[in-house]
Length: 376
Image (cartoon, rainbow, N blue to C red):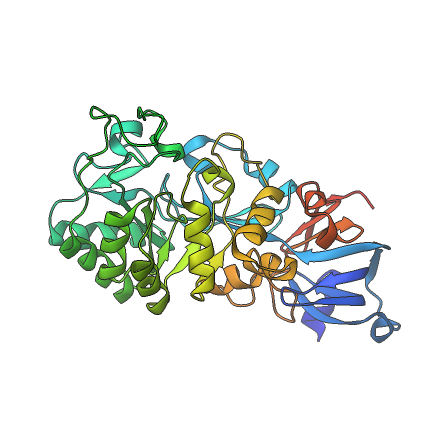
């Protein structure tokens, strides 16, 4: 108790508290040091000696978790992302480093460079420095996975992208006909990692306690991903995926990071999302921060597209960006407001369930128990 008393105590009152699972009314959260010590009714803290922050008619939520970003490669300022409601970010394609932050600064996790085939995506577009590593044998693949994990990678990312999907943001350099079909001279035949090499990547990553996420956009890459034991799709696919393959992905418990906002020009993404949802597929929030036109923080449009395309309720969309993503990262209680959870919180005036846009400009941001923004 003496050790606890030496740490700063902050008591936060709000009219509504979303704890990562459900919304409570007139609840309060006690923060001790960098952790949440207790969440309870306001009356339960009457005798507390903590510093009080009363947010009034506001909603307190866990800080959002962004599962698909490229802030390191694109040099997006981490402090801007944090001030706009994202408290944890996973960089999937960029410089390799150990996890850092979460103590008044943005918590940044990384995959390091994307593993791809020689000459495969994204090397033709972006080169290989800090963004991609080409492998051509199973042995090389396993060595690369071990090196990435040793360097701090929390997840391994592979590219299974032949190119040419109509409407995809990564195919902007391609030429399509009015029918949406690829022009005969478009670059839509990039080499892909074969299944045996992807299996080796997955096996080595799983031995090291890491998941594997795959950049896919169409059926060929999706099939390799499913048959190789991939854990996660980094995007809802842009081109038509046969229902039988989507069903197989759901049966194998593959999670899908949404990134729907940037895929708005893909003709098949809505059908893929709806079919996955109908089959019981699980979606996780990700907006691809650092991509042009995506906010450097919470993306309200992403949340609205998740609801529209998957028939999720607002509370489920919020869960996908908080508790469910925290669980997916295997960081205990991250994305929740429970006793023992990291004290990463945001707050907005009113009820964001009826106005997601307010989440893009939070009036209160806390990271690891340290106040970053307080406009109340």
